[in-house]
Amino acid sequence: MIDGQAVAAESPVINAMTIDVEDYFHVSVFDGLVPRADWARLESRVCANTERLLEVLEGTQGTFFVLGWVAERFPELVRSIARAGHEIASHGFAHRLVYDQTQRAFREDVRRAKAELESAAQVEVFGYRAPSYSVTPQSLWALDVLIEEGYRYDASIFPIRHDRYGIPVSPRHPYLLQRVAGNIVEAPASTTRVGPLNLPIAGGGYFRLLPYAWTRWGISRLNNREKRPAIFYLHPWEIDPGQPRLQAGLLSRIRHYRNLDKTEGRLRQLLRDFRFASLKTMLTNSAATTSPAVTPAWALPYLW
Ligand SMILES: [Zn+2]
Image 1 (cartoon, rainbow, N blue to C red):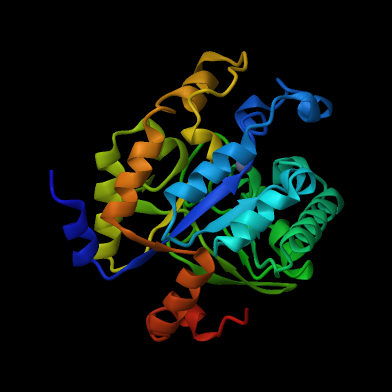
Image 2 (cartoon, rainbow, N blue to C red; image 1 turned 135 degrees about the horizontal axis):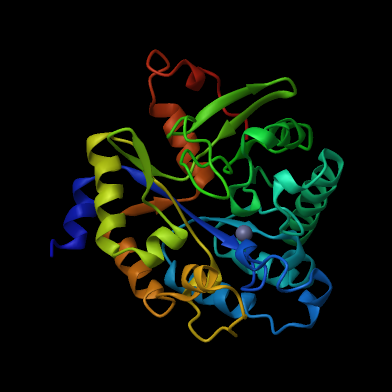
């Protein structure tokens, strides 16, 4: 095994560490199993798990996409995240898939989440990530709503083929999207290109279910060969092997419960192997260092 410090030292690229702050019962694969009306009655583990992540991430700044539902119940948690120096961003309010909502309901959801987070942390919220990356070809209207609601970047378009999400032809690196309502920066979760395919390399189930070597190889390839930062993502429940088990179908159980006991160790290894900052910092750095001649979209400045 190659020494982790050597890899980090070798690559000057600063990646983005992002955490989607939600509880184990909010997850989309469990939609329908746990009625929303019951959420408040279930044992909540999001505070303990997020605080644990804050300890693991000590010395690294990240972006926490906090669910508005969590912020409303646990505003002190949002303040702790902000106090630790992390960026607060929005995961929407009620964890509904974008393409399952009307435009009006989506607007209310993202507005309420932004207000809740800003009131809890007393900071301005710039970023949004949809539940289960649910900005797809049929819900691109969401970007106009986000612009109108004051969001500056979105991290919801996954450039892969997947049964629930993804726009496989969309760009793999951050870009500026020009919409009717204005401009918004899109920050896609990271992939590596293998033949005609974009394969996910940096986060969530792909980090937890596949061997760590996959993530390490993928991020190294991105940093060293493409000279681009990766956007990594994880959820607090992914480091919690003690969470209550919900009676889901077999595939959902594999997706959600496998390797929960290994994820924290892997995250610690990842932090030794690569350098990370918040997504806002990463986007600002990339905008400053990317030549406008190569990617004209970057020519426009980001106004945070
Ligand atoms: Zn989520």
